[in-house]
Length: 110
Image (cartoon, rainbow, N blue to C red; front, side, top):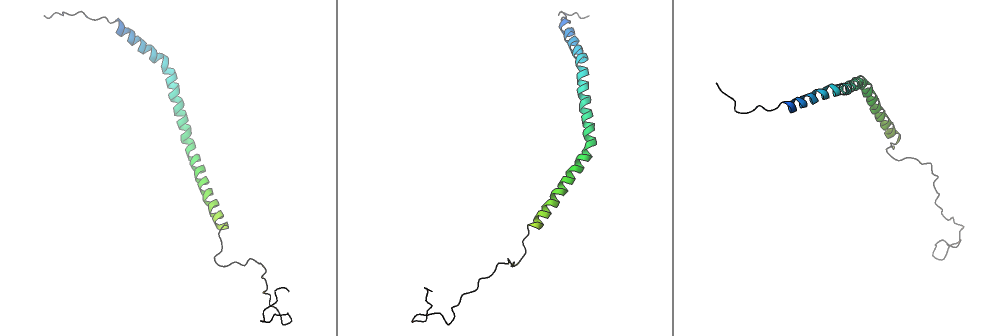
């Protein structure tokens, strides 16, 4: 038969730690479950709203594309020359009755 030469250690600190863990589990279980339930409810709500959000995102994207195309079409310039309806200036040519100098040039003083 074998005999133990060591004294068994006291179990009081271990029992106190076990009681603290049990009390914490009982006390904190309610708030933790409430937090987890809240996260679940929000996730379920987000899952139900996700198709609506996706629809809004697609509609916004299509709207942006349509507006961009309309603006690009409105700002397009035509290819080639464009008539601006500006009156042309007639070139002034002196007629035969104008006085000329000796060399045949037009008198600039008149």
